[in-house]
Length: 205
Image 1: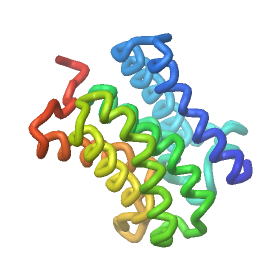
Image 2: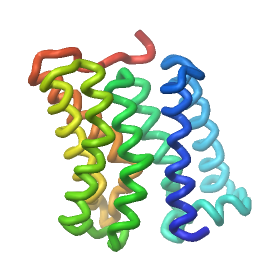
Image 3: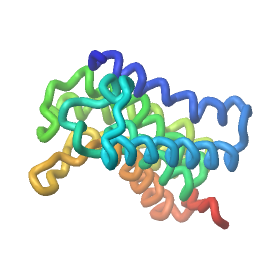
Image 4: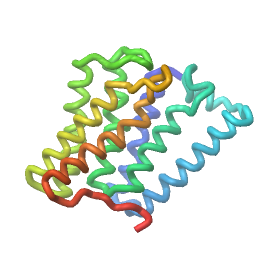
């Protein structure tokens, strides 16, 4: 599968927030759906990595460096689902969209190895895109300057997570894992500073 095809598949994840935004499912139903999908994905990854189960889809969906590690699509679902389980839509939807939409666009603009940071210009463009994706939801959630600031700050956190890869044991941490939680943290911290609803809404409460 070409990189452009992978990015198209990546962006197809927009269907998850869309079915909520179109009122096809409610927020609780979307969260449970994402938990089920994530469980299926990690079951498949367990079979692939644990017992060597082979399928043509694995060859298409995974890159060479993912052959013996958890694949990016699994980290993608894990990070978005973790944020969805913890937070309300005004935090979660922006965090998801930054990964689903901004990340593949940033990948097209950038040309960096898996263990390299992206160019500052690419991070800047990604920040603008992330903020534009976030502000409508954070503003709808709390209104005023708090809503605008939260979207902008969350966009900044998301762009940094996309562009700067932490290196652990010589391996770059996949941004599929870091973008949604980083964006959510930026939004929540800003809400806290403004003294408004943080959007913390755990599924189990």
